[in-house]
Length: 74
Image (cartoon, rainbow, N blue to C red; front, side, top):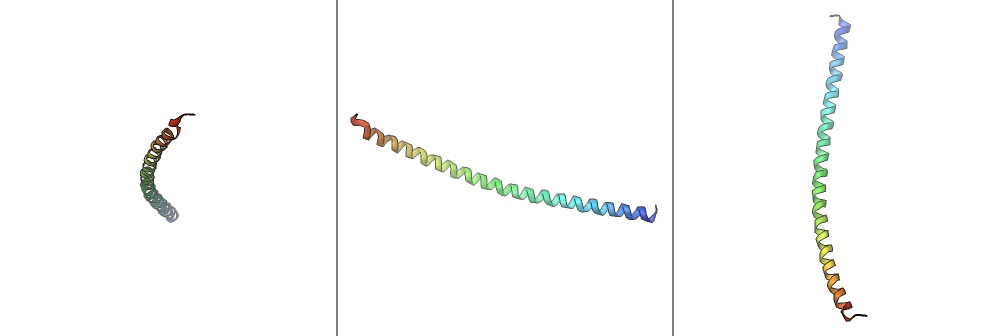
């Protein structure tokens, strides 16, 4: 093998290794961000469920009030 060819191969291997490490780091960062977003979504789902329950309770109360208000007729 010639010296120039050996240097080219070494440069290629260094570049490939650097690129692979960058891809792995990006994948790990993306995975971490995704896990955080999953937790946020789960929390928001819980909040939405609680708010839907409150809305339903308010609907029941409004229906009860409407029944009392309009019970006398027109």
